[in-house]
Length: 296
Picture 1 (spheres, one colour):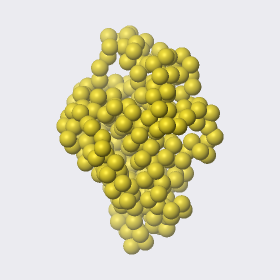
Picture 2 (cartoon, one colour; picture 1 turned 30 degrees about the vertical axis):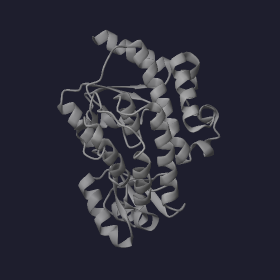
Picture 3 (cartoon, rainbow, N blue to C red; picture 1 turned 180 degrees about the vertical axis):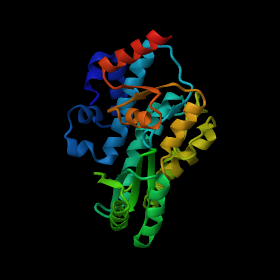
Picture 4 (cartoon, one colour; picture 1 turned 60 degrees about the vertical axis):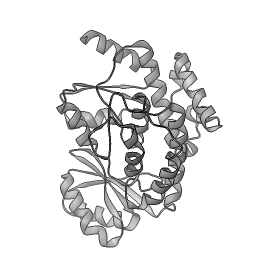
C-alpha cells in the first residue's frame, strides 16, 4: 500500500523516508512489499497506516488550500488526526504508534482474546448481551461504528458466549481476525505502557479541534491529549457519535485519508446524505480535488 503515492508525489515519498528515520527501520519497504503476515502484526500495522495516511494528506494539502472544520480518526486514526491538526509531529506519531502497537501485542497472549462485529442489532442490545456474558470474563462493546454495526471485544471464551446470545436474538456476527482484543479492559497493561511513553512527547493545541474517540466531542487543549489517548486504549470508539456531532455542527463533506475506504462506508451508513471521499492513490486524490473545485 502507498507505493503509488510515493511514486507520484515527492512530498509523499519524503513522508515514507521520514517514517523510516523515525524508527530506524525500512518501514516503507514493508509497507510497499510486505510480507503480509509481518505487516499485519499490530506493532507494524499501526505506524504503517499512520504513514500512508499522512502521505496521502500531505499530497492533498500541497495541492489545495482547503482547511477542515474538524478532524477525527477511528482508534489508531486519531494519531493521524492529531498530526493533521498540528498537535503532534509526524515523527512522534510514528514512534508512538510503533510503541502502542507493541504494548497492545504484548498485553494479551495470542489466542486468549477475540473481537467480533455485530450487525442487525441495536447497540444498546449488544451492550446488554455483553453484560450477560460478563460472568464468562471480560467482554464489552469496543467500537460503535454505525447504527447497524457494533464490535465487541474481550476474552475469547466470553466473546464466543456473547456471540451465541446475539445469534439467538437475531443478530449477525462476524469474527474478526485481530492480533489482540482492542478497546477493552484487557488492554490495561498497554494503556499503562503508552502513558509512560507519552510522557516524553510534546503536544500542541489542536487546530482545528480533534473530535476524540473517548468523548465524541472536540478537544482543542493540548494538555488533555495524553490522557485522552491513554483512555482510548481501554475505552470504546464512539465513532457514530463523533460523526453525528460533526454533522450536527454543519459538516457536509468528509475526506478519508489512508488505506482503504472503511470509514467512508461507515459514514454513509450513519448519514447517507453526507458526501464522503477516500484519498489513498493519485487517482482518488485528483477526484477529491475536482469534487471540491466543482463545488467551491
